[in-house]
Amino acid sequence: MTISFIAAVARNGVVGRDGTMPWRVPGEQKGFKAATMGHPMVMGRRTFESHGLLPGRRHIVLTRDPGWSADGVEVAHSVDEALFLAGDADFFVTGGAQVWELFAPYADRMLLSEIPLEPEGDTVFPGWPFTDSPVWREVSREPHDGWTVVTYERRKPRAQVEVGPGIAASAESGATQIKAGATCAIGDGDRLLLTRREDNGLWCLPGGGAEIGETWSQTAVREAREETGLTVMVDSVLAAYSRPDLVIVYPDGRRRTIFGVCFRAHVVDGTAGVSDEVTESAWFTAEQAARLPIIPAHRPLVRAFFESEPGTTVFD
Image: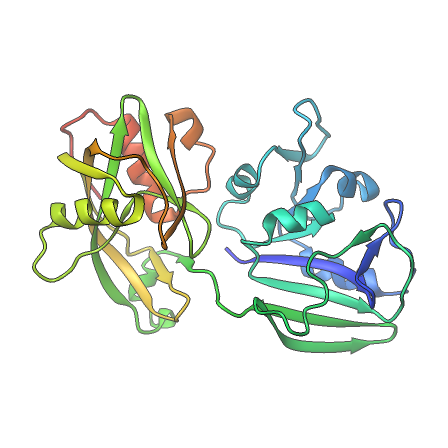
């Protein structure tokens, strides 16, 4: 999943005035159409209402209004719900300013049509300009008659997941190595603890790679403690799994396919917190977890926690 911002931005950072763009540059909108065609688009309600349905693209509208709806639109009421609806597809965030701000921690690149004007406006692109940005770096510049398309990429990429049949063994996947690890499905009655990863912003089960000299269960208990601060006790094996259809690409370029064991566990001591690897931890019911953007490798494990009987082991 690559998340891209796309916008037309004036020299002074202005992107809008009274709900419209305060300029008219012939041909510039064709680039927007070409880039977004066939991809989901996430936008705010006012942005959607400014242009309506655009052909050939899914429209995911983020709004705080629980009663709002429109034909042909998928409605989300949180960033997590929008990410869930987008699934594993590459998608574009098209505005407005508040929506770009909400998705700033998740964006991988920005396609900005820079307009050589300085109009008055009431909406400015968040973070503009990016000349000395510690987060973004310019990677390309494509001049046109009346505008320039500038592409920015994150200096430290988010961890990505590549999905495809047998991708871990395919020649196209590059030098992929096996990551052996363990995860914890920590339960509390009908709730499951999930953590939000620092390196890509998606939800997952606590867990990580095994260290030399550890058993599977020792790895799971240690990772739960390091990531959340909880002391947990393993109850049973929930699943033994491999994911040859998934390759994790880490920010430093390492490529790993996963072989692991997931344990059911319960809390012995502590309150779930955060760490260098985890920005958020929370308890979810099955209904709540079903609408979360969970990393692909852990989706079957989360389903197994809620759907299988305690003591049952899933082999996948």
